[in-house]
Amino acid sequence: MLFPIRCFSCGRVIAHKWEEYEKRVEKGEDSIKVLDEMGFIDYCCKRMFLTHGQDK
Image (cartoon, rainbow, N blue to C red):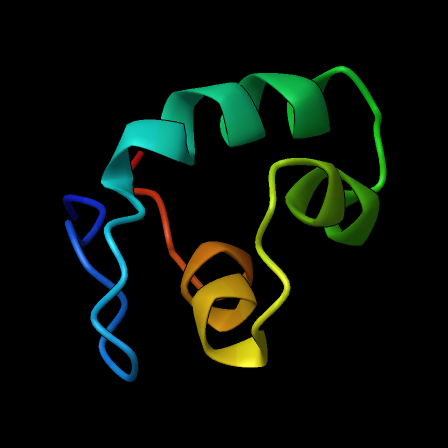
């Protein structure tokens, strides 16, 4: 499934940060800390990253 371009709740553009988020989490960094450092402070945007399922 493709990652959404915008947050479903607030409409903020988020897709351009997906690859950076994915790489950092795969390296073992805490996902919430990564999102905070990337500037995502709203729970709605964090939800988009944390609940996204990857097709394998």
